Image 1 (tube, rainbow, N blue to C red):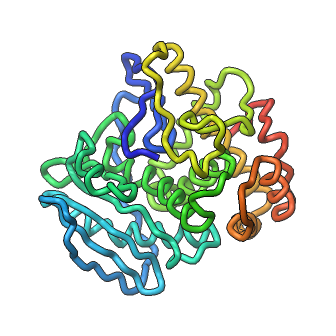
Image 2 (cartoon, one colour; image 1 turned 60 degrees about the horizontal axis):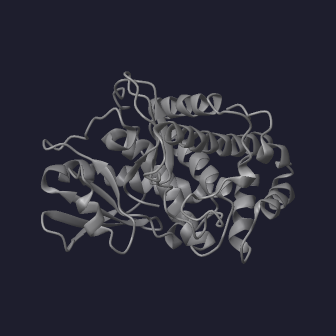
Length: 332
């Protein structure tokens, strides 16, 4: 995954974008991002301590947040963003704890991606801080307020409420499932979409509703059926996902039409994977979902789509073969 943006479709006069931000697909038909939700009251996390440490980067402060029997994670911020970053720490701690519970993962065992609160439009600070690990950015303004943008990941509220939950599910996957295993891309991104959106629905319901509507629109625009079994990372066509962690980047030789078609296909695949997880969740329930995730963590070696589908059937009782072929374009 990359902290840069890969734009996959040209913008129309009202600002339609199909894009990937690292690994999260997002599209909007709106000319402006709507105002963000009033922050929801976070589920309390006991004994959250914030300790300042050297960041190694001029103008940036690092804080290590550690909760008693809860998550431990790093925050970075520039001077103007300090207040917003520190007041967001309890919210992030609660989000991370909720992610761990939903995924049947010991929260203390997860290495969460650091989050940077800063004005960093070119991504230089995030790149410098993330030389050894991925750092995700909540874009800020010079006055210390979250940035606003019609492009979701460049909007501070969207980044905190929608992008960060999705990406921290990927952090959990690396910690719990292993970073060198090949798992089907539909599982890796479907779990991040489904679980990340559940967190967004709890903490920022209006933002979650907009994101869900965008996903439905992405799926409706899909040209033909979506075969999730064939969904691969562009950077490594032979890989499923485990080792292919780069976001797909367009070739400079591709035409605008090809780029737009690729972007819409990617966005539709994210939506279809999310729809698959939603169906399993509706039919089997949360306990069965946790059994499935725990079984993935307990297995060793790579899992292809057939093996993962068998695991779903065993742990949840739900047959997903038709969803993977998606011949009828699964509805959200």
